[in-house]
Image 1: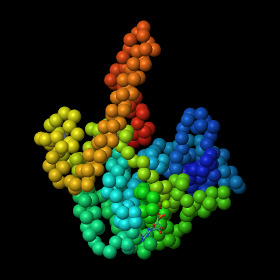
Image 2: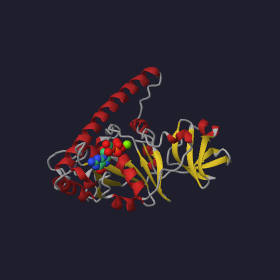
Image 3: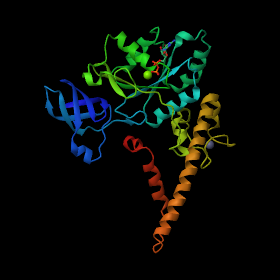
Image 4: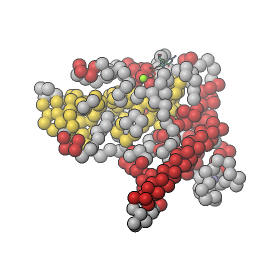
Length: 334
Ligand SMILES: Nc1nc2c(ncn2[C@@H]2O[C@H](COP(=O)(O)OP(=O)(O)O)[C@@H](O)[C@H]2O)c(=O)[nH]1
Ligand SMILES: [Mg+2]
Ligand SMILES: [Zn+2]
């Protein structure tokens, strides 16, 4: 039997199947293989008992994506929720989320919530001016007054969407608005887990339609770019994607070097986006400094331990260890 993990609660995996929600545990083989199962995974179930609605997960289907914050598999799109007000719109934070989506190769939808509490269009206009050129879908909503929900809903169809954004911007309220509008309640889950339905401490797949799922997530703020090299940050900005020739300077980070070939794209991008870019590059530079110190140390230790055969760690190997120290996600997605 096939199913999809909609929620994980300690050792229990709640799997949505044609028979209903099954409470499953991992086969010990999977545990031995150190194979992890995440919310959103498609899994094969064995030894299904219809009376207790219990089974064992025997294998996991290949993932199309795996995101890290929060951990969820097979997410097809990210809805980045920001509040226009309360809390104030934070452009840098929004750019962080966008860049993380780009990193995971998932197209984001930009949702600006709480439109009911802004009294002029000034902020909305500013938002459009900055983000419309990036060609992402943009939706203005009010979860409270249920505006914009009808625009958001068609974007969810046949997707597994995850709502991301800082705490308090209205993610949970939006999900409620979406569910109420479609007269759908969260899937009935056994009593044991009922208490978890309204909290967002655990990530959970909520069905909004036959093939559409939405995932709420707890607010998270740690989105630093301390796992990439400075030269990789440019790939996270769509403004830099269509530049036909590479910068003529080797190792140029396009942060103000005179004669940089990216200058035209930089002139065309909004000031706040460029500020974000520079900030992320700086974070990556700090990371680069840190790992170069570590690899020098490692090398010294290696030499010390093997003072008979003085093998130096080749730069290729060093690169490899840097890559593996990156989140495993990267490996799974490329
Ligand atoms: N005025 C207004 N308040 C909202 C809106 N959406 C959410 N809120 C309020 O903002 C607070 C945080 O909402 P919540 O959904 O818990 O945010 P989350 O942390 O992102 O899940 C709550 O007090 C909500 O009532 C909205 O569209 N307009
Ligand atoms: Mg919430
Ligand atoms: Zn350059």
